[in-house]
Length: 160
Image (cartoon, rainbow, N blue to C red):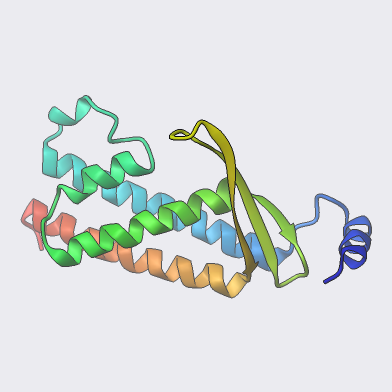
């Protein structure tokens, strides 16, 4: 899509225009991610003991809670799931905190600014060619992780 078409589409639909299919898929993604964080948090608390978990920053999203989650099981499968969840956390942050440009009803791009702590400089990450189907696929991956986390939680609690 050329710049003139994009500007024309934006003026016609307005800056507050969001394609319904994107809204539905992004909403599902956000809700499922919140569910995954909840199950992961419960697994972390059960593994570490409720009293011990009152200190530390494990409840923060991102690297801290993924690191605490990794400690729950040493198995390669669990660690691979944590790797996948770490990547999906980055995707979640991009989707939820990024600035969206909808090139059409079915294709978008998103850019998220960030501050690089190591170099003390601004930066950004960007993803293009995002479709509602791609978001739905990421959501399905999250659902599989949620089911697996529930099974691990059951194992940890001795109720599998």
